Image 1: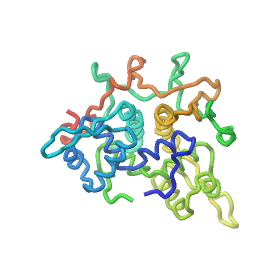
Image 2 (image 1 turned 120 degrees about the vertical axis):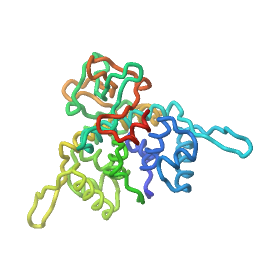
Image 3 (image 1 turned 60 degrees about the vertical axis):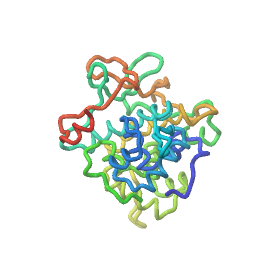
Image 4 (image 1 turned 90 degrees about the horizontal axis):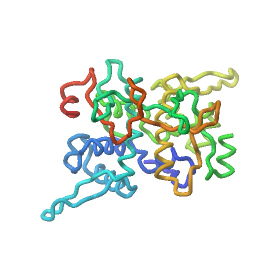
Length: 157
Length: 157
């Protein structure tokens, strides 16, 4: 557990980590986006202690990435489904996939990203918003945006 | 701290998290890729306890994301510089930036991604490898790659 919270930090990376910056949370989102919904499914997939799983699922619901839905009244049972915000987290998971494939898979790729309909391979690319040009990663940088404080502006100068 | 290791797992996400799946590590890489090099610089930027910072820097060196270079002999002092593998981790940070901007920045963007030379805005996009077409995120999925085990193939069926 972390002792400092960055939830008030301006940095979008720090803010995101404050919501999902925990190992298990990211793997739970991986499984949820792959279609797993029920406590037992996550539990089997991740071999995670039940108390930890309960805590992380609740945190992801509170952070707005998962929605908790009752699917049985007696006994009361719930399933966990990604919200739009949770669906969009796929971007982060695909970045981890790409980086892991490039640097942590000496034996070759176990997982690839494809377009569902066509099966053609796709990859994460930095892309010019205005002119549809691919921009290599090492030619990208961060700058202060419209909501940046003076401190953030100095930091990114 | 986590009690389970996924380093042997096939999943590239789990493998990546095993290397950098710790809140502080990701923020240290953010700062290192922004040009911070010295212990005191990370310490000031992150307000991180020194013992934690030492531990996380060593772990990032061991995982091959940072290189430790001596810059002073008396007293012996070291700085930490991203390797090629560490530079490439920018992809994950930019994904966190994009997601954070979209979902955790109600007051507007404090940080934007631009092409360094031109200043034009860029964004992470899924891109067809073969035909240079943009593919919307919700039309992408994972499939088993050439190195997938039978278990992974079943999982991604």
